[in-house]
Amino acid sequence: MSAKLILGTEIREEILEEITAEVSQIKAKYGKVPGLVTILVGENPASISYVTLKIQTAHRVGFHEVQDSQPIDISEEDLLALIAKYNKDDSINGILVQLPLPKHIDEKKVLNAIDPDKDVDGFHPVNVGRLMIGGDEVKFPPCTPAGIQEMIIRAGVKTSGAEVVVVGRSNIVGKPIANMMLQKGKGANATVTIVHTGTKDLAFHCKRADILIVAAGVPDLVKPEWIKPGACVIDVGVNRVGEKISEKTGKKIAILKGDVDFEAAKEIAGSITPVPGGVGPMTITMLMLNTLKSLKFKLGIN
Ligand code: NAP
Image (cartoon, rainbow, N blue to C red; front, side, top):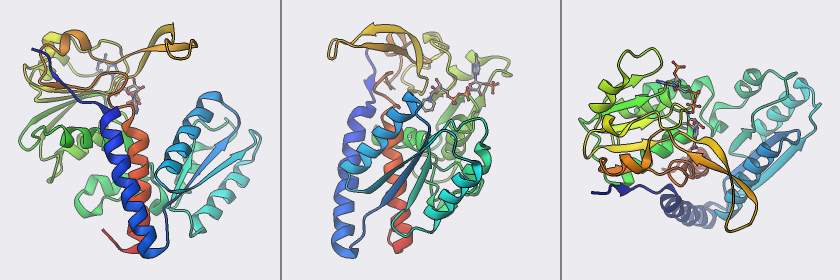
């Protein structure tokens, strides 16, 4: 039997429509829309395309969006001054600095200079701490883990009391999603195990998972026989394994593969995310949600 597909492409559309509707209600009542600034240093083509997608999505949902492009040789001091300017700017609710930054700039120093109440990426230590505490303390959950949790909720997967196994312990995916799934509350209240390269028997842990979240960056790491029949499998991995010519555009595009052997796994899992089209589209969507939340916090509405 084939698993139910959990499609980020579809869930994204639902959420963006909800955000658009809420933005127009807030605009009508308070005369304000969420403001998002994206700071891009240099002309890295991948960074330009990420920033463009973020700005296009912000525009689509009715945000005030600013793309601030800076030369590759901007000094650290000037970049910090720019962040200070946006920290004070009342029309801006979310500040994003597109990474990577050039080598002469201390990335950590720059990210930590963002006002935690405008840190819609959720990477500032203050927001990491808030996430750890959980409950009402949480302001901006990091976007990829927030997207994963939202997919699990919208797919109707039961999380309370579930065994969740997270493969990977990065600061941007593994650790935060594990932390989110163990909190009390909606889409959580699970028993969580994190596995990594130091884990003795990866297969043993994966086999116990009612919900298996894989964020390792290793193509086909998870074998079909590691999946518990009926489990929910969330494949976060995006691995470039080659190139092909797009049927739509005739241009060269990357062939992407997840961390799970999808074709075999979908015959065993109860529900599963594909790659591409699964978790990927959720990250920018949740960034929009965090920016909307930032304005709502400021206006004191929930
Ligand atoms: P990362 O920082 O490289 O972390 C990978 C984690 O997986 C590490 O904790 C590593 O363990 C663990 N790992 C690697 N190989 C393993 C193995 N053979 N057995 C057990 N554990 C293993 O990666 P990341 O930033 O979390 O990203 C993970 C994947 O998700 C990548 O493919 C990335 O492209 C993708 N991703 C997708 C999105 C999206 O779709 N929006 C967003 C973020 C990331 P150690 O700590 O022991 O080294």
